[in-house]
Image (cartoon, rainbow, N blue to C red):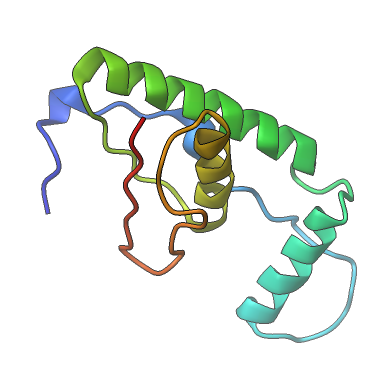
Length: 116
């Protein structure tokens, strides 16, 4: 699948996924899905992880502002992001009165559209 010409692709560091810790210090063997749920729960409790929740929200606000400027300058923009962070960007766009899904799908290759 080709989205655009290579010279028009920009890497936006603010759109990276929310990080995971190297270890939670628990000597249990669990499935990757279970570890994801545990790590995200710890982050929602605002424990120091790779990134604090307030920092994730701040980064999402920066990303939403950047996307809004690009959309204004170019008429539209396509952003390819990661599951959980996309939820934060969606909230930031909706706070700016953009219309779109409250929670974009986190399924593989899912998409969501937002309009101002």
